[in-house]
Amino acid sequence: MTTQLREAEAKVEVQAALGGHDSLAAEIAFKHGMRRLVGGVAAIAVLDDNGVRLGAAASAVCSLSATPPTLIVCLNLQGSVGRVLRPGRAFSVNVLGERHVELARVFGGMTNTPSSARFAHGAWIDGAQGTPVLADALVTFECVVARESVTYATHMIAIGNVVAVTLGESGAALSYREGAFLSVG
Image (cartoon, rainbow, N blue to C red; front, side, top):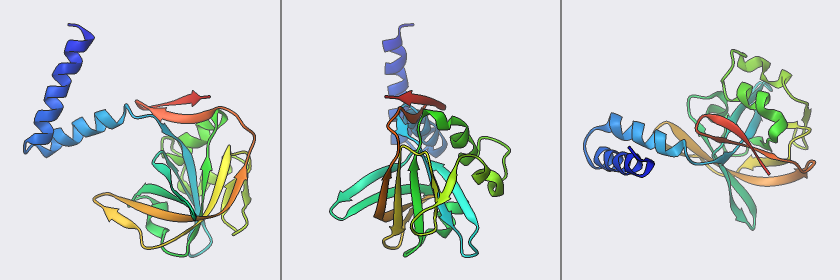
């Protein structure tokens, strides 16, 4: 069977699943499709109400506006970071480079590292707002949650007003596709 034929059959299966009433098939088709989308990888860091460092890996980060500088981060509501981001809360978005694969695996929950030990990986320092920032990130955006997050199903969208940008050394960026980390650049 040719690659084109397999892709055509897969397209028909996805269309049938999304157009029908089989929500499990639609979810599986959607996840397989999204795995083909290349996404940059960032480590999101925040302090909870008790000053405990919390972190997560995210590939759903993008700019929202240049005026004022604003970005969005999409996070799972079940994760520790997603549960504490609310208006006025400071957080950092640390764009990872190819040298950060292990850190991305740890922050992404792909290892047995407890969340309390995540910050033992990488060179973390306190940012301008006291939030942890990765000292050797390609770039760090220090943000404050601008307004109530938008929640939908299992995830939330946090809007962050950028209050500081720290450019690190230029280098290849870390990305994620098809369940694997890739170097870009």
